[in-house]
Image (cartoon, rainbow, N blue to C red; front, top):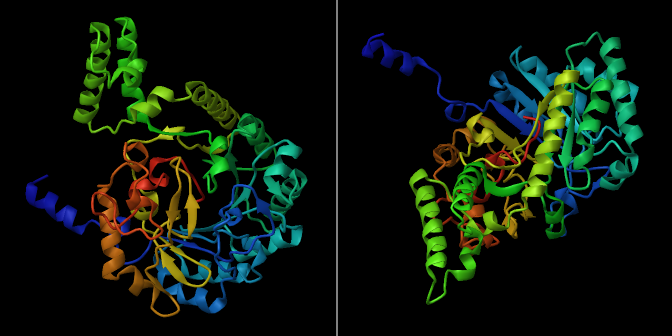
Length: 445
């Protein structure tokens, strides 16, 4: 191929989803109300003050100009979608306007999923449904999802299986979502097998997002990165071979006079830091020195068993990382996503959808909702193509952000302000402290 034809091919190619003139995915909150009080939900956060409400038909209609180009429409937010009586009408209207190869789905606790409701949802055109499941032991399930029982989930799965036959909809994709915590980690493989036996096609596993400080003890992930961990373990092995105890580094670092053996430790660690800098890897040495490797090995072993179960049962399993990915990427922005609250406000991602306080990085991080407009006041495509929103998406795709979780200065005043202005790189987007981009949290997308 000539240079000229290659350039022409590149010119004719559609832009990446984030830079198209329309969103490719919409995440629409049908309601912020819920009929459960799950321990890990941001709504149980003492600082959660958002008003509850339901998406109405007028607001949904304002989104329709974007439907003609949508790849996916996800109808859930912080509430329970089945509480909105217009849910089937939303699905029907969307399916009439969306491309034939697109899909509509939502996540639910399944408590209201009766046989009749399952039929009306499938008749409306629902393509995917994901049921919350955080344990296969009745006691654990009830403790996490206060107000629900494992039997409720079993009835919901039976209702969906029956509706697939009644409605002649074998194509419906049924999934479960499992939020991993220390208390339910060991139950994950058995839970996946239980779900697969009852008709689940896929499973989404996510780590707990700690919205309150006590939840930190339940996290089964670590905020060190995969590349930092690999580099450290490689150098630790080298140090062990030559008899250098690098774990004594902080004990001797500030000693005025060091013995030859102590100086070797300092020199060894300086070599580690230099290697990391050359590779562009952020190192949190104190965290690496004190990491609970046994806990990570336990999580990895459970994930390995879960993968084996999925392979044997044919379950499409989507697991999160157990440590952060060094090479970050925002699927929400890069795949052309936009998020709509029940009142019609447009946001860029899950992380900035609702006001909350997060402890995902191990320290308090106030998160403010980022709003680019309201579809009740401006058109959905006008907001999407506004200079402010497009610039935001362009900036995010560069991934030129600090790694707040690995920074020796964290938490700093810049990210702990009640109102975020900019990070230490002068970015106006608070992506440096977001763990969604590192593969730790997962959702239906």
